[in-house]
Length: 246
Image (cartoon, rainbow, N blue to C red):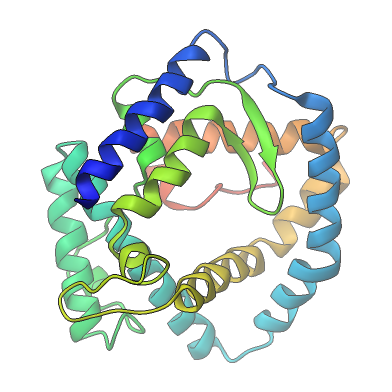
């Protein structure tokens, strides 16, 4: 039933993507609107996200590392169905093994013993899966709070919630393997992941803001390059957004 709904949604959204297939990612769908939203996002970062990230950085290292490991382990769940859709069975093994080991021996993912065993799952989402099928990004634009995206990746973001097991048992409040949760659980984990990412890049963002003639364009360039690396499964893609001051 869930798979049938997902297929219908994908068909509708793919038609939208095809309609913009002649548009390059370097082109803008709504540049003026995107720049306005980008300014809003910067204010949100200045007054909310950055202060929270700075406070988070003051926590003891074991707590920070445990939080980072936990959110990363949860994100592995989304990689599993996408590895299947990409027929990437090597990474499927890494994802399944890593999640199983870290969720048990690693105490729900707080620790990362799977990494010591050589299991290093790539982060995969539907946007990357569509890209692996040869579907172009479509034009670029910016979403409130969520930030930069493309037509393909925004479709992927929506589709993620249909195939992500964690989303299935939280925001969709379904039971999976006798496990269920609530939307609060979903957004709490995702929010923690965002704060963790922002705290790791405080200096990088600061350097980017100081050295960019056009911060909007710089962020656009970084985002598009990062997505291409992730689609090609580049080793560099495992560090989210890489070194932002390069």
